[in-house]
Length: 345
Ligand code: GA4
Image (cartoon, rainbow, N blue to C red; front, side, top):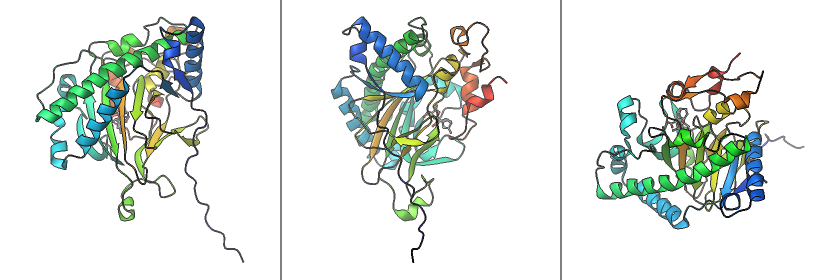
């Protein structure tokens, strides 16, 4: 007689057709028709998944390789030296705000008890490129400088993407870029390292993906306007589709991946949707990713743009400042819905 075995939960299947935007075809070198097609594709991807891949981005592959190597070197340092990296991460504005999550951390995400199989560095990167406290060592100083160089290149490319989005929605070209280019824009850079899955006896301490898989970074949406990620060739990123099913995103270290954040969902009155995503740990190879989060200035008021509400239409979100949204977000656990507190009824 057959004994019924419990169903084995399969790993998330790969997303077969990741929407892809070729910035080279959409940019100065391309045709007007190419640009219109790219804008249309960006809007479709933002509506459907809140997620897409960017190719033809113009960020030098040499820079990407240098950042990847420097990140690997950093995470290979003794724990004590990594913890000393705090000084290099402090952005003056965040330090003054007193609630800064900046610096190096291991396993703890945020301050409300979330854990993941990850260690990371979080840096404040305002568009003004504010002067920073002197880091504790020459190599940390060089790493910070390299990350700043990377930020400049990625911010520039992010703005090209934001221009396409604005154009697709029939708005002024700089409708979104001016938010992240503000002198005191609250942008961040996150460098994540997901070591290969821990030994089974350690797994218990961590959140699971349901089938013994280890969660590197639990499911969440990003609060900002836009997030732009680049990783090494190791898998791990998964996104939730509209119906709630999870799919994995095949890694591509030559491209960038873009997430629509909560703030962009608000500005577009829900037309663009922030994407729920997570990272599952690879069992043999470590994953390194670097994410640029484009956020507005703390005092900036956010609300659905009139054009997105339409005449006689209704605003799905009330007005709030970015400072207010962030403070609210930092009181939540990772997986929580943060936008619902700002919905109009
Ligand atoms: C998710 C997006 C960014 O990584 C981040 C994260 C932040 C943190 O790690 O400190 C948060 C998370 C993120 C959203 C909810 C809060 C804050 C951890 C957490 C539990 C830097 C951000 O801005 O929001």
